[in-house]
Length: 150
Image (cartoon, rainbow, N blue to C red; front, top):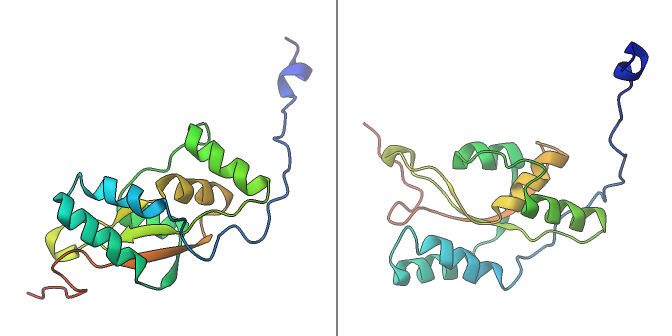
């Protein structure tokens, strides 16, 4: 290979991304998905109660980078099949469903949990780490937002 050929770089194609990426409400199937995930961390009854709670709280917005950092989860790569699927939706003009979260408990050493929407968070982060993600956010069970002070 000649030096000239080695110096050629191929830029990724520029794709127009819609300015509005998110739906105003989660999809109906997101709640059973959240319940399924939460049932790995709590009893089935508690998981159902938490998923039902997520239906009744207002949407709030948090940057993609903060959702990832708060959860302690890694950023999934662009070649992850579900991240690719969500990015393709955005490029096609389909809006993503808001994310369902359970707030962590700092005093207990528990990080925030993405009950549903991890791949959507990662896809959004790849578009802009500062993307404001609409979330339904409930408190960790038994904390009601209260933090223990020493």
